[in-house]
Every structure is written in C-alpha cells, then in structure tokens.
Length: 235
Image (tube, rainbow, N blue to C red; front, side, top):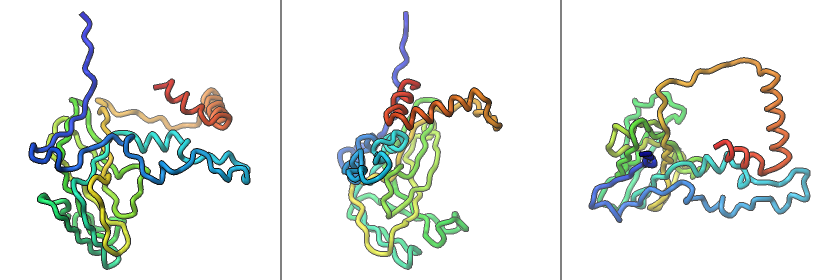
C-alpha cells in the first residue's frame, strides 16, 4: 500500500489566554505594504524615457523575497521614544504583557550601530517545525520601516520549542513613534537543514556555461515574463 508523507507544517502556538488577544502570525504574501500595493507595474511616464518603465512590482526575485515565509507581528501597540541621536530608547505600552526589553551594550560592543542600544521584541508565539527543519529570522524583507532593524538569526525550531525573542536596534529619528498592533516585526523563513554542507567550486566558466548564461540573459531582456515561467518550470 502506498503511503504519502503529510505536508511539512510549521506550527505557531500561544498560551490559551493569549489566543484572540495578541496579533497572530500572517503569511508574508498576504501582508504587502501600502507603497507596494499602490505602485503601478509600469511607470506611466515610461514613454518619455528610453527604458520599458517596469517597476519592482514586475520583479519576481524582489516579490519572492517579500512573500516568502511568515511574518510575526507586534502583539499590541507600542510607543517607541528615541532620543540623544539614537543613544537612548524608551518603550511604553498599555498591555498586560511586556513588549520590549533591553540587552546590555557590552554584548554588541564595536557593532556598526554605534551607541544605539540593543533592544529586543518579546514574542509570545512558540514556533515548531518538523524534524530536520530550522527557521531563519530576518528583518521583514523589502519592507523598510525607518524605525527599527531586527538582528538576523537561525534557530533549530524542531528541537527548541519555546518562544524566541528578537533583538533589534531602533534606527528612527529622535522623537516619539507609534507602532501599531499587527505591524510586522520579523520574517520567518523555514528551511530544511542539509546533512552535508554544499561544496563550492570557484573557477572560470566553461564555454557551455557561458552559452547558458548568455541565453538566459537574452531571454530575460526579451520577455519580462520569461524568468517567471522559467523559474516556475524549474520548481
């Protein structure tokens, strides 16, 4: 008898008392920023230029990055006050759970953010993946918000089944900023771990590789939808 493996599933669970109260995770493809939704596929002024006028709305790599995985969102509305040119960050909220905590400066001494203090978003969702799967946590891709930047990390969520908190730096200008409940704070990208590392070969291309590269480049330039069809066919 043939047996089919169930579809690999990522699970987000919370405490029973939090269900229906804290903002839930959402598929990244269902949460596109307003600026992207309003962007036309083709610039209406394209006729005045020599190029096609296509915008990133027709760029599949850009869209695939934006829509891959899931978004964890802010559990409740948050007030973030940035002062002293970013050297001080104060957070406040009217909620019965803490939303932001601090890391010590010595933990990131010499980092490129300078005197901006390391903070962390407190998360109340536990993430579970099948055996052999981990999750990459990154700042929401292609969704710059101008207020904070989450530090990227990888967690083996098949064994570590407890809420994961997300370090971040406040990057916004001095002032009081409101981040609404449900705003995306981190993108979750599940991936299957490999038992062996991918070997690397670094060399000049062979003639047949050069021919493939040229063919792909010419097809991409000739038809805006070629990469989409080619990539989907390969998948």
